[in-house]
Image (cartoon, rainbow, N blue to C red; front, top):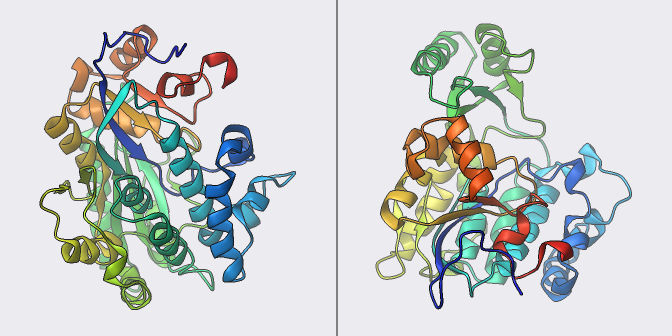
Length: 363
């Protein structure tokens, strides 16, 4: 019998779930073998992806996932990371217990938007791997710019407006310097992700105060996503990917501007234009996506797909910003999670069983 409901839903009643797809940077050393550990029952799905990749001269994700050792050189480039993360996340989505959960909306962070399109059915499986693999491979010949991440919250996971203003000031200063470009890339819960050219990133690192001898932190093998520096990538994406790949979603989608794409009213031309236009070259407001999703769809649970659990903190921080579930700070969140988890990370081995039909002993 399933043990995945700590609170109990009652006969015939399902939890309303918001599903969140992760972006780049979540398949790391600890995630090596994720497909093999959790998804041996989905070999046909994995093989379909690998047939596509083999057809364009790329290594299969099954082979990448089965490597004896994790390699930054092999596993972090976009042409490999994107397909791996998509496969892990989609396979996790397939494991959600539909007897316990009604998925009322989906969203994602950055590359997770492409995955969310697939989860919602706006991209069919063949279209999804084509789009994700194509966009993930756009900088295989060399990265355009880079990203760094910086916290703008206090220890209680509450937004520190003083730090937010400081980050904005640094962006302005950098862009006034000759040859330097810097932009907000992602509003990520309690963090700001910045994108820029090398000169801009280097100057920002000198202007932003060091925190815990860790931040500002460069994101390895990440280009200047969600910034004007990728305007050529946007154009190339449009040239490579036809609008016919897109369908109206079966489940409501919330994008990186907080816009809802409904199954009943989605203009697929507008969805295509956003995905390969503004989504590529303008800031991705993940915090706003979470805020809109919980306010509009009132989920009982938020399920964050794997691999990894790097997105769990930013989701919780975005919820704290809205005081959702009554959470005012990190202490409230931690206490609530101990009592009856509202936020379930499928990449976390001790939480995974809460979202699936599998007992904890089999996970």
